[in-house]
Amino acid sequence: MAKKLDAERIENQRRQYEKNDRKAEEKQYIRETIEKNRRGERKGRVIMPARKEYAYQDAPKIRVAAYCRVSTAEEAQVGSFEMQVQHFQSVIDSNPRYELVRIYADEGISGTSINKRKEFQEMIEDAQAGKIDLILTKSISRFGRNIVDILTTLRLLSSLNPPVAVNFESEGINTSDGKNNLVISILSALAELESQQKSIAIKEGIRYRMQEGLYKFTVRNTIGYYRDYTGQIKIEPAEAEIVRYIYDSFLEGASPQDIADALTEQGISSPKGMDTWKAATIKGILSNEKYCGDVLYQKTYSKDYLSHKSVKNRDVLPQYFWENNHKAIIKREIWEKAQELLSARKWSRSKQKIEKMQKKFTVAKVKNGVLRGYFLLDMGWNKEEREQFLNIINSINDLDDGQERM
Image (cartoon, rainbow, N blue to C red; front, side):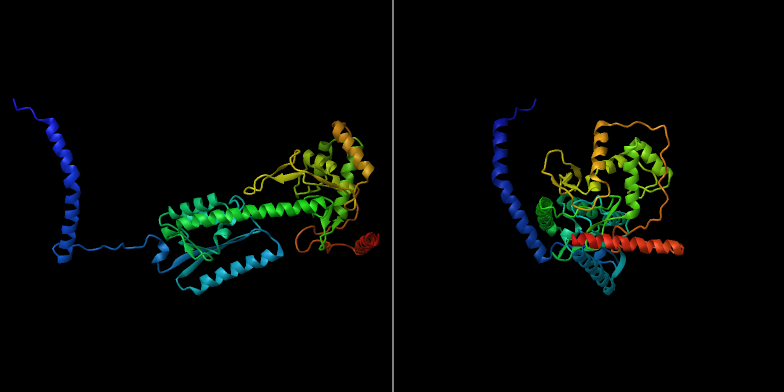
C-alpha cells in the first residue's frame, strides 16, 4: 500500500504557490508574448466583418423613414409640423444614398403614449417587417415624451436583424453608437419631465379660465350648438329642432329608450353621426345644463398626464358653474322639469308610438374645422326653398346683432 500523503504540508505549499507564483507567472507570460509579437515570432491578422452591424452603415441604398409629430393642432403648431415634413423630405431627396420609404406623421397627438400615435405604430411595424434601415426624427421629444416608451421602442429596433438605427437630429445622436445609450436615457427622462411640467401649467391655465367663466368648452359632440369662426357659441337650427323634440317627447311621458328608437326609425343621425341612437345618449342630452344656457366646468379631469384618460370628477376637484353663459335652446322651466323626471325616474315604456318630427325646411351649418360657421347649401333647392334659406340667414344675423347690442 502506498505511503500516506502529508495532506497539510501539500496543501500549504499549493496555497503558497498560488499566492506567490501565479500572478508573477501571468505577468511574465504577458510580457514575453508581447515581445514575441513585436519581434515577429508570432503571426496574426485582423479579419474585418463583411458587413456593418447596422444595414444603413454600408448599404449602397439606405431605406430611410422620417417621423414627425406635434402635440396640438393649433395654428402655431401647424407651421412647425409642416416644416418638419418639408425638412425631412428635402434631406432624403438630396442624399443620393437615401431611398424614401415614407414620412410618418402624427399631427395634434401627444407624445406621452404610443397608443394613439397610429403613424408611429405603423412605422415600427414596417421596421419589424424589414422595410426600413434608418429612421430620422427632429429630436427625442418628437419621438416621444414617455421614457418607458422611448427606451422600449429603441431596444426593439436595435434587437431586429439587422438592427434599425434612429437619428435624433437636434441632439446629434445616433442609436447605432452604443456610447449614446446613457445620454438617450437622460434626455428621454428630461422630455418626460418637460411634458409633465407643461401638463401642470396647461391645467392651471384651464382652471383659471374656468373660474373666470372664460374657458371655451368643446361642442364637437354637443348636438344643437357650434362655435363660429370667432369662437362664440351659436345655435345650429336643424339640430336644435332635434333637441326640442327630445325634451318635448320626454315631458309627454316617453322614455329615453322610446325617444332613441323613434329617432333611429326616422333616420336621424346621432351626435356622433351614428345611425342608431342609444338611451344613454338621450339621457345625456336631457341632463346637459348647456341646453338651458348654463355651463358646469370640470365634470371630468385627467388623472394621468401620460395616458390623458379622463375620469368623472366625484368630489375630487372643484367645479365651476356659470348661469346664462350662452343662448339657451330649452327654456329653463322645461329643463328643470326634465331634471325632476330624470331624478325620480318617472317614465315607463310608452305603449303609444311617438309622433315623428315635423318636416321643416332647415339649414345645417359646419360645426368644426376651418369652415365652421358656414352654411351647407343644397344645389337641389327650388326657388321657394332658396328664399326660405335667405330668410333664415337674415333672421339669424338679426338675432346675433340684437344680442351684441344688449
